[in-house]
Image 1 (cartoon, rainbow, N blue to C red):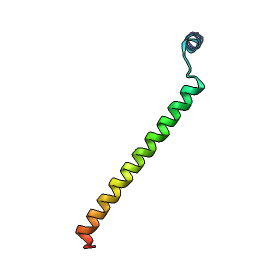
Image 2 (image 1 turned 90 degrees about the horizontal axis):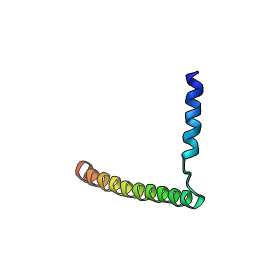
Image 3 (image 1 turned 90 degrees about the vertical axis):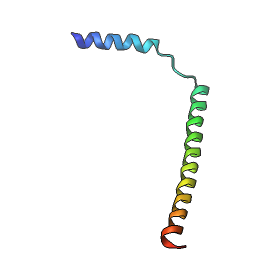
Length: 61
């Protein structure tokens, strides 16, 4: 009985959802991709720099 009430309320709420348009979805996807690439490059450069510094001090290169 409560299960039917639950699914009924889920159905009502799903009718209130405002789904993004294709254009909004494409824009948001590109934002996520570009942000991920920027962070990946940033952390790769930080990692490379730290490894170089540590190798210089500990390996004497």
